Image (cartoon, rainbow, N blue to C red; front, side):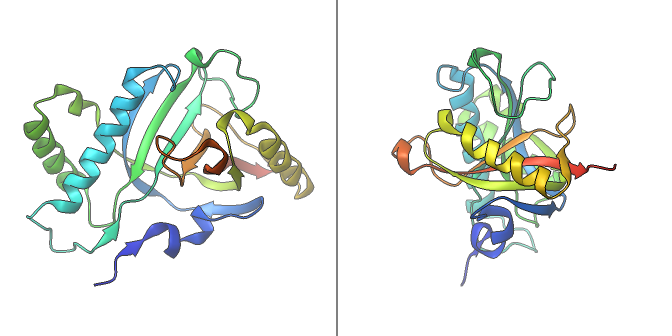
Length: 211
């Protein structure tokens, strides 16, 4: 049986080669919110572990829902901000100020009931109340610009500046606010991949300049 690979089926969402405008549909995610330097904060690594734990619990559960289909677990993603400011991925000196929402896309057969059932099974398996931090959330990003960044997260600035230039040329403007965030999609596992080979989709919300 062929497995649905979201990165391959929805290349427009996950495989931009250069800056491009895109209308992102509402997508259901498993999410965990936290704060602090991702390189030093234990809760960041814990959040990744819980998100993948839940994702594999759903995928490998022997009690398959009627609408179940085989699929590849989608990549880890993150929304980032600093004190509810319009953070655009630039000019961060103190990573301890970061606030983040880590998330993994859920397959379409997963509704909130199936999510909570899997969450309860994961809690029983891990005997860890931190599982309660997992939430089911539908995120509707709407009109965005996105591009691919290759390499270190600390070197994203030039990629973001190129994307900003494209937005201006297309007569749009960024629309980052408390509800629309700087978004990163981690196509590489940054825990195991050489820094120079990391592939990250950077996505920013936009609107027409005249809006």
